[in-house]
View 1 (cartoon, rainbow, N blue to C red):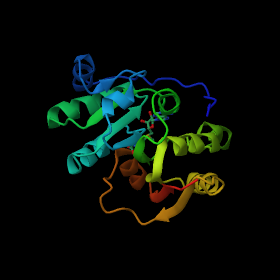
View 2: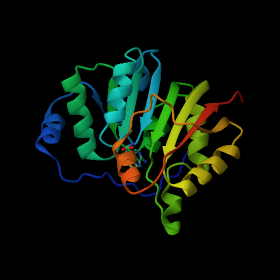
View 3: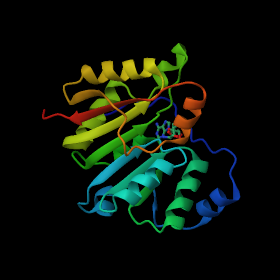
View 4: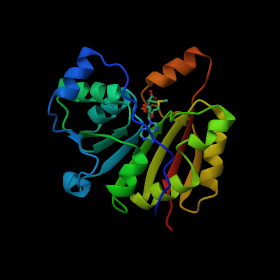
Length: 215
Ligand SMILES: C[S@@+](CC[C@H](N)C(=O)[O-])C[C@H]1O[C@@H](n2cnc3c(N)ncnc32)[C@H](O)[C@@H]1O
């Protein structure tokens, strides 16, 4: 399925020395946007982590489950540097990073039924009404992701914007490919940087879990 992409910009931003050094190193864990992902993952279970920010949660999940490979995708260059640095410092070999719009990666690099799990922890909420169309989780997107997921595989989403949570529930309820809804916060979900900021501002996280249904 073809997804129409709104204009997307890579977010280059200012970088720390740690980020710069990691970005300059030839990390084997930084994949090109057009990489043959089926060859890279070679039948291993792959969890797609979309919009990881600085990647702290990715590292925690990777350390706790070394048998699963994580494909971590974000467009924020400093965050890519952070995650590459953490991979090297932790000696991890199960995290692969792509700097790209996840919609492009799903369109061009991921095959049908390849993804064993997915996570979207605190996707950009775009709180202003006129920006809602920029939100990642939209009808075309959930159909595309469903196609790339294994039957029964789960997608974990967290947001601390109640109206985005309602939007997500509406979009997924309207799709025949997904079953699920709100869940208590999973005990093993790490606190993320964005979540910490939200808690400090008085926002409460909402967790949602959906399974790729049998079509
Ligand atoms: C609000 S931050 C949350 C970061 C992290 N998950 C956390 O909880 O701290 C959203 C992240 O999603 C990334 N992002 C937004 N749209 C994206 C897209 N289409 N593809 C990949 N990453 C995206 C942003 O660059 C940003 O790092």
